[in-house]
Structures are given as C-alpha cells and as structure tokens.
Amino acid sequence: MFLVDSHCHIDSLDFTDIHQDVKDVLTKAHLAGVTHFLCAGTELETFEQMYNMIAPFEEVFAACAMHPENVNAQNINWSEKQMKTYLQMPRVIALGETGLDYICTPETKDLQKKSFERQIAIANELQKPLIIHARGAIYDCIDMIYALEARDNGGVMHCFCDDIDAARKALDLGYYISFSGIVTFKNAKNVQESCKYVPVDRMLVETDCPYLAPVPKRGKPNEPAFVSYTAKFIADLKGISYDELCTKTSKNFEELFKVTLK
Ligand SMILES: [Zn+2]
Ligand SMILES: [Zn+2]
Image (cartoon, rainbow, N blue to C red; front, side, top):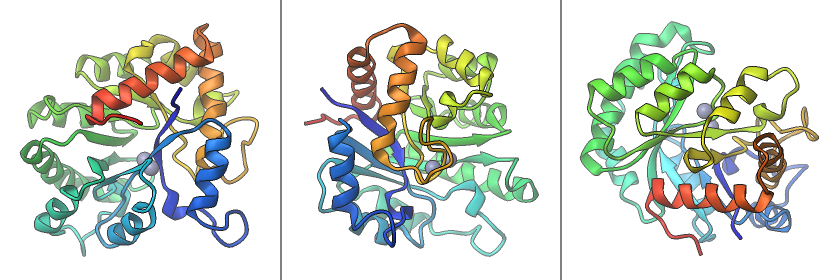
C-alpha cells in the first residue's frame, strides 16, 4: 500500500535541530507508511539546490515554478527558457506551485497574474499538470485556467481551504483537490465540509511541510510523516477505511502526474 505526500517542501525543513538530513526525513516518513513525495518548487533561483537534495531518492518527485508570493518587480521577467529546462529534468512531473495569493501578498496582484499567465502557457506547451496555490483567489485562478485553455493537462488545487462552491467549480474544471493538515483543525469547518463533498477519486493529501502540521502535531514543525494523520482524519470524516483512502489517493496521484509508483 502506498501513501503519497503530494505537496511538501523538503528543502525548507529544519536540518539543524529536528532532522539529520533528507534520508532521516524519509526514513521517519516510511516508518509512518508514507511512501512517496512531491517536493514543490517556489522559485527558479533555488530550484537546482532543491532538485539536488531530492535527486538521490527515487521516491521523491519534484515540481518547478514561481510561487505567487515570490513574484516581485525585480524578478517578474524570470527566464522562461530556464523554467522549461528545469521542467524537462527527469524527476520533474509538474509545474508548481504557481497561482495567485491575494491574502499574503495582495500588493503584487497584477504581477502575480502576469507571472501565472506565462506559467500556464509553459504548462500548455510542455503538457505538464499544474499545482495551484490559491489564497483568496480561487475564482480568479479558475477563470484564468479556463481563459488560457489549460484544462487538458490537468492539475490540483493544493492546500484547499475554500468552501463547497469553490470545490465544485474546481472539480468541474477537471482538477483534483488536495487537503492539508488544515482539514484536521477544529475551527476549519468549511474545509471539512468541502472534504466531505469532494469524491475520494478526485482527492489528494499533502503536508505542505514545514507549515500547517495536522492535529495532533498542530503548532509543531510539520514533516512528510505527518500526512498519515491527515489521511486518517479524512478516512474517518468520509467513513471509509484508511487503506481505501491511501489506495485511492495514490491512484489519483499516478493519474494526474502520469507516473507509476513503485
Ligand atoms: Zn502553497
Ligand atoms: Zn507549498
């Protein structure tokens, strides 16, 4: 049985006090039954460093993109050629994370849109699925995906924190929806409602570590092993077995990113 952490930031984990190295992180995850990982990119500048960290471990995939929070007036003309080169590296299975964030960085809204538009075009050209980061901006993300005809390669709304209406529209788009530790938070009723609504065959699970550790680790630094708590919570919420949740979300991962887990 597989369980995939479909979105993590292994390169941002604490290698001073908490983990010895990437191998140590993965060993802890494997002990918790977490078998595969997707390490999401957040900027071009640090991509190679991230890729080199995960490259020795064949169970770790990568994605490359410019995160909306990292877009600014200085880097808005980031190199498309560079991004395309990275996206064609062997373990890079998606363009992500990209999208729009109107909550953390509302001041760069227009720049974010411009950057997102260019990334959608690249995903279309290279036929890569998209990993979407949408905060306070899910409808704008969906509108742009329709407008730029980016539906065919598929994608995922990562760290979903919107309501059922937004979930329905993301599903209509043909996208998967990924739930992070937020779904386990007591006050995240709307996310729990969305999670009940989204069919298991359209769902992924993730940590987005080192952020957003699920209950019972809430408030502590997050790590890939903890996706097992989120998966358990969701299985209970949906009244299905843990095995079924793991099996179906792993199959979804394979379908969306066109990989075979082994
Ligand atoms: Zn994100
Ligand atoms: Zn992320």
